[in-house]
Image 1: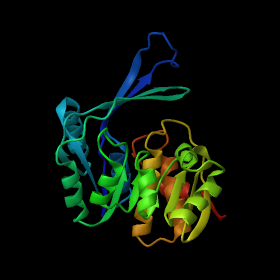
Image 2: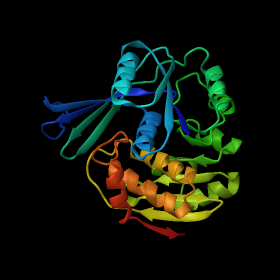
Image 3: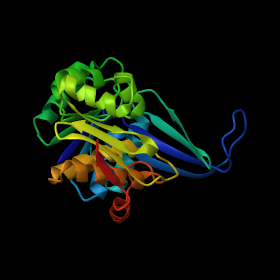
Image 4: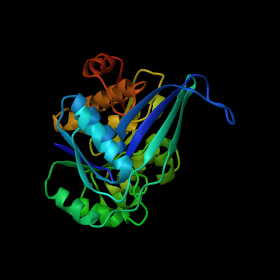
Length: 287
């Protein structure tokens, strides 16, 4: 079971514009998609669609929180709500040239959140800390309470490395912020320094892994469309494959195929058969 704690979930609203986005202009929307979102929810959605068991846990409150919970239940997304102080919406403006993302700020941290995180840790499973942290929530306190296996949270990365979690999942920009330089060299150096595995999403360039099993680069098919949630899908598929006992190179290939399948759909809405087909186009090399 993969358990994804998302301190700052959001109701994703994808607005498909009739023409390319232009500053100062009036834009009409051809189609609207609403989705229960946030990094951990995207991850869980991908894992479930790939045949795994997963549960998202998130604080929900206010109008947006109620709407998010309703969408999750309608979809059948495994989501356990915690008491929250509010909700937020994240807007994705999609046009023929790409996407523009507009995220509302996280609501304040709810009372008793750290205690709830500690109770979750006692449930076991492959625990993942996903997404932004609300203001006033110290990363070290949350990491010590939840004791995650994997971390995908910009604010929590430095402390996660210091505390020696098993895996961190930065994107290319976040990896460069942790340690400037070529991505593979940076990932290897972080692993040597902290003993933590590094799974980095590199966008169209694929993904890399550096850890006790060695260093690997994976490149998959290039896709066009909404990429939101591809990094979450990458991490979810990687953890699922490893949970199933797949060796590192095969797990990385599966993760890259799943991330590619997410592009154009967004939010972890992958199709298992498409992932299996794309897997044949993924190349993994030991670095």
